[in-house]
Length: 405
Length: 229
Ligand SMILES: Nc1ncnc2c1ncn2[C@@H]1O[C@H](COP(=O)(O)OP(=O)(O)OP(=O)(O)O)[C@@H](O)[C@H]1O
Ligand SMILES: [Mg+2]
Image 1 (cartoon, rainbow over the protein chains, first blue to last red):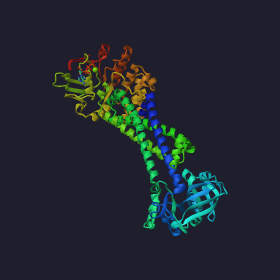
Image 2: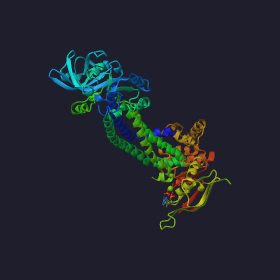
Image 3: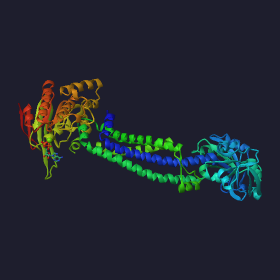
Image 4: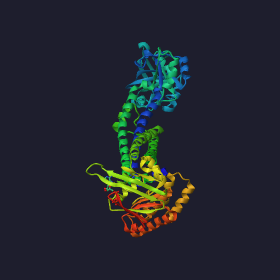
């Protein structure tokens, strides 16, 4: 009965209810959109960055991350690798040797990042097969290399060409080698595409005179957002005076910082949106209460308990909000889903900025359900606060006075 | 004693002791017997509404007492009063009595829902009452779809739905034309005679006064005459 009354009451002034609903809907739509974009761009970026190259966790010799030189490399240790792989939440463990080198082809020379990998173990991470752009992937025993496809373009090299790499090996030994290019890689990172050379681990160890050495192990875990679930188990088992166990937020604190700044910025905007929607709801409730004063007087007079009248008004307040939230969510979901499936490429300055930050210049969205739930819940809470007004008002209402107004 | 309503030296002073003191009721002692059909009359500002409001538990006196049956209504607190009204008093106001979003049937049923009566009883009584006020065919109309007179008749049906001890009506015909006024009074008189419903109503209208069987006249908050016909 109370619900029926509440439902019919909110449709008494269809136009006003419609306007209020629209304002809530727009607020929900826009804030869903904004958070979705943030989550999409940053979330996708971090997810792809960690999954395809950085890993969720890295284990190095103590001090390597602070000073990333070969002299801080560690001994390859199968026992350690197996121990980590058998730890809960860990999905993959892969050894790498990374260093810098100058790559020359004909007149072109470029500074590059040389990564020695186990092509088979990388299948969970860098997944050479999946990111192959042209040619073929290297095997464990190959005496060949793969290039980021943009690096190849910059060097004007094609499959089958031979590249010279010059660098500095372990303990200052000079490193140089000639390698056939067998494949190009296209990874979801502009920086890597422009700078990376991938070669078999053994070959890189030979090039850098780093027999049986690694710069570290790269790990993939089951929950990108909670890598510490896995590291807790690892730290208990490895000698932390020898090794550093780092999660991805520790590996790239600038990214985390950037994301926080961005999110904080959008919260101000979202706050304003909610303030507008909140005032819209409040104004509507205020008007409904004022217009219906006489009616409330009648209802109290004939014996409707205050608690029921309050229940009715609270229901009306929440119903309008819930309808607005639903409408906004229903409206934004398909739009965001479409954009998620069909990311919009950025152009011009924006694209350049994104690339400089190492982000793919794509407008991506996230349709994570928590975005919709969080936004909806927040607005619902605001509406609960607004509902205090009718509660207090009706609690103090005198039927005779109410009917006089 | 068969008195439904008893007031003893009832007083309502506004701004007591100040230069602007208003004695809306100034010592009203009145007894209404079960089954009476009484009009409260008097010039504007004489205290009719004030008296009905205090008897109806809608307003508080500043002196004296009022009893409904054995209950001293003037001693109840606000929330006790709401519940007392629901079960003991039927109300008909001057206009806009009905809940606009409910149909005639739902408006009548509303009171019984508040009283938590079973559905079968609600349905039967709603139909019976609306038939008695001659609106069986308007059951599903909303107030907006009815004339002022029809709305007042639904209000009478609603007032009776709770099986109250008596019905209070403050100028129930003030907004009606003469035909609707006559119709409403016919219905009230009939309910009074056949079902012995006690009515206490205020009015300015001579035609309504003529239909009353007891006329209590107020002036400056005092009863100046009380005539049974
Ligand atoms: N809230 C109030 N404050 C001060 N005086 C009031 C208040 N309410 C009513 N009065 C005064 O009390 C007196 C009685 O008012 P009441 O409404 O009972 O008269 P009434 O007989 O119903 O008049 P009417 O025929 O115009 O409806 C009037 O003088 C009125 O001005
Ligand atoms: Mg009056």
